[in-house]
Length: 154
Length: 108
Image (cartoon, rainbow over all chains, first blue to last red; front, side):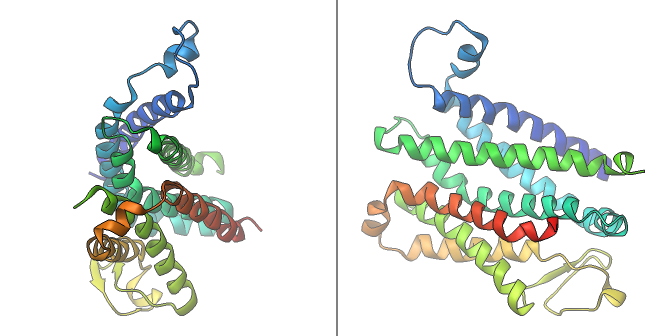
């Protein structure tokens, strides 16, 4: 059951990364010229349509992380402490704080992206999207690192 | 709930979460703890030998949710609507910087 949840956590995290990275690039776009390069096409998505999915995926992934957390606390963290991997513990502590603060941002993020897109909310849309994207990337990389850490430090 | 209240909720949530975390760091108290070895929630601070490690993260999340929901409902609608946009992203950015600064203790 735990393994299934862990795989689901990774898959939801990957989907979230894709959606948030697209949206992050699209809010950084300054001009509306026709997309020619790969990067322009990557940026040129219809960002508002991603919003509800991102809110759902983010909330579901924090919930999955919360359900997996007891196993981490009992099995993984003591191993990190035994191996004296303080930095690994530290990046996970940051992950749980970033995820918690970002979880609370979801209502404001959803509001900022609610159509019709208000001009005065442009900066809010951009920065909240980047904060959520940063959190998703940090959480994904740290999660993968810790999941594989026994292989990295035999 | 008016749209401005969504922003109030988001700003207060992060501040309340970090406030509860630092409160715990200073005074070692929490609303409740979860002991995964015993599969039990408790308000007591039990010893590691008897109960295994405690999880406090759930209590910070739940406490922040209660505080921010209350704040969002209590703050007058006119105040919530007047809230500057920069606060909505500026406060979480400041909290992220605070997290980086405080948690660098793990890297020394």
